[in-house]
Length: 68
Length: 478
Image 1 (cartoon, each protein chain N blue to C red):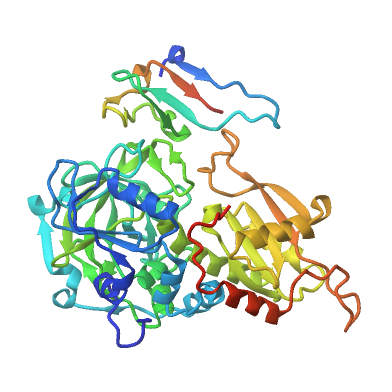
Image 2 (image 1 turned 30 degrees about the vertical axis):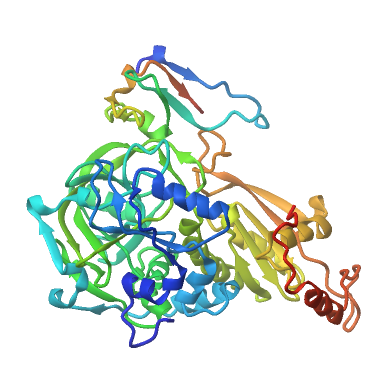
């Protein structure tokens, strides 16, 4: 995963809601889908787009928006 | 028919016995979204029949020869009846008592086991014959949702069973997701740490009482076969699996069995997947499962749970009621009942008390919060019908001063699938609410609170008589 395709959700004060879900974008169809924190720690596991069934590595994703 | 000594419990005999509660549409229905949509529509209309789809149409357009059974456990009343319990509202103490008295399973030989009538090995073992459903929009494919995964602890040999999702990816390959906190995951990690693939057997389709028994919430390692026997009041009939022999038994009267291995250290993307929370859970890295053998009965039935729908929540929540009852009764003898409502997913529990002693309700609330799945627990008196949400709101509205009667505890274990959890957190914040009234200050004195408004019973009976036979179909309900 290259740093250029990752954006982190800014963390606010403990009483401010920021959400807990990370999203990634498919390089083929540009569809977004949500991914868990553990799979993002395993770059060797290819992500699978549920919209167009493309398998791709994290660094191929146009954007990853990371929670936490 | 409630289970008894002489009964052989299985799904097909249950459907025959409950035929007036079964909806069997004659037309083809697609396994891609349409069967699940039917369940959502029934739920919206407040109807909870069992649904049998005789002509399920697969994603490739072919009609499967295997019928789909869904909505099997959407009705608490039907599930309680399957357990031999007359009133679903009294299930918690009965479930706790029965699963606490285990009965060892009865081992059959292969020739006597209906689930091994058909054996498919090698190239004939084809997962795509099974009419697995693609349920929700973000699901990437067809999932087994009622596959009971049975593994064993390699150190003790003790079995463990849990419902865990499987994404069918090919004829002999699927991903399998044992939730990280589950006992099956612990077994899998033990095998992998020894450098071995983990043996797993999935069994699908059985009598609801057996499904409930194998969902008993147990310690580790404890046998689910024996807990199930306790619940059904007779030994569960099991048979050695084809691949693993008596190391992994399977219920002899199940409909379908899938045997194989979770391959060591092999992980693939799995999900997103519509979860019990009512939200789509994120994509995860899940073990890869390789099939060695599929066995099934002649004219097999395929059972599907609507993930996040009532038919999935009811049996698990009723099993939770038994577990919470056991946990809390140990510290609060005045506990009389527990309800884990489907509206609260698996996060809420209501507990009922009769004449609790000083401190007992708070002891009970604290004990219940320690149960991993729960996030909110509410205590009520025995005049509140805790199976009626309007009664629960009445108790909360009129018997609680929030700063005095509620407390929160941060940092307890819980489900990280809860969409409200803090990103990166591994624990939750939980709340307990005491919605009980104080007891009378002196023996024989009235309670030091206002009496609840009511009209005499005779007047209520007269009102019901007045309305009897009146056409109310055009009257507003809101």
